[in-house]
Length: 347
Image (cartoon, rainbow, N blue to C red; front, side, top):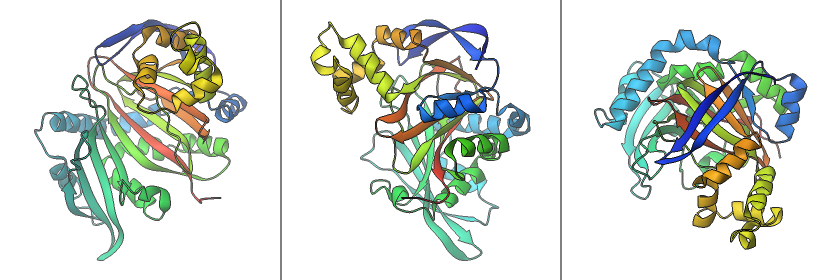
């Protein structure tokens, strides 16, 4: 994609510094052939500046959302009261209450609304879930996820009828969604890569606090073609690469160490990556600066600033783009992340 001047950024998350690294921003958007090659190889596609034209028109709602997250973080305002205030004149939605799942230590509040057509219910059980990103008290990053039905029963995977309504709920509360969903160039790019009409569902709004972020993980979900991430305020650093390549680097790092029996070959490393919750694997991936440096040296570090979009393709359990996030700067940032799905579900 070409590159322009480099910038040195420090990767620090939840009290641990992984190092300072030089990273170059793309000088241009990728050519269609290059983007298609990366999509099929499950590699991240950095669309630098693609959202920039929308941001001036959305400056006020973006600032409003940043203020809201600060108020929610300090308990100055309840999420439910904010939802009711923002939907007060919107006849498409009827607030129906809020709950807190005591079995989810990260959940703060889940606010439900029903989608309406006139006085008739069109889509019941739409929700916006406010939660902490991590259990670690040093990281006060927040997120809001939009979906519907029973979260524990994965209702969003079983039907598609209410999915557009959940997306409308997100847009009614946060008009800056249009930076992504209303960006014709972004939508056209994704549909060209996916070779079908798409919808953006299971939307998440992120407010990454300084020193926060997400550990290495994947977003491989049934029917999901990938994820589109849009940086609307502030900056983030990313480590992103295909799962199979990550497994190769894990195996390379593990050889000659105590980890060799666990992950000394690519086959073993692939199985190790599937051990969700394994503390040994988690430490290697997320709390080992030497491994972070290896990922950076192999070219897997990205730097996103306001106006950038990032595509993370998904083609299957072992053919998906793994990624982690480091919050940068001294203030909390704002970003949106949407699952990419075909408008019509295919077998």
